[in-house]
Length: 235
Image 1 (cartoon, rainbow, N blue to C red):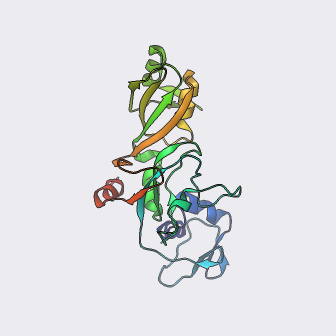
Image 2 (cartoon, rainbow, N blue to C red; image 1 turned 180 degrees about the horizontal axis):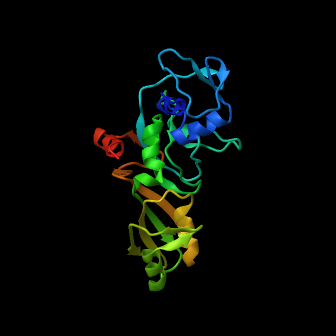
Image 3 (cartoon, rainbow, N blue to C red; image 1 turned 135 degrees about the horizontal axis):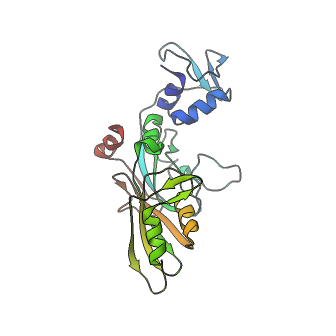
């Protein structure tokens, strides 16, 4: 088995992140530092360590969390800020990490797992997993701006066209909009709004694929159902 695949199976990180750890010389096999991503190991005979600790394949865990504001999508933070792991660490023994990210001030649907292969199915653009967002903008969205977003815009040299964009509600002064995208660019919705001159007041991710946060209060979580897990594994 390739070393990066083994690390992903063990829940250390996604396969792409595992490759970075290998290149950085943070993984040893039988006491030897390995920096070659294509290195083959025998999981039954070889001793693989990360940060000096022996790692092994764990039971796979898949959960969805309704992320509150002011939490970061990381397993730890040098600045001492609260992380999404703080919301589950006393109830889940396995080491989990977020499959993708939400900004510090963004709320909503976040999947956490210790299955690196599964996480890649969510994060890698080639799988085109739909992510649905609800956002509140300041004021009204003019027809020309809505049309521009529907037709697609170029962001950082890449053409971005939402799968769906529609106005959900018109509040007293502000509009509530729904946007569904498949791209995995960081801060994508914020960049889209900025590109057409919309002032974003708040942003919430409602779902990833068929997994939604319906029925979950902020900070609450649940295990994914077998159907939800298979939805990603079949991609």
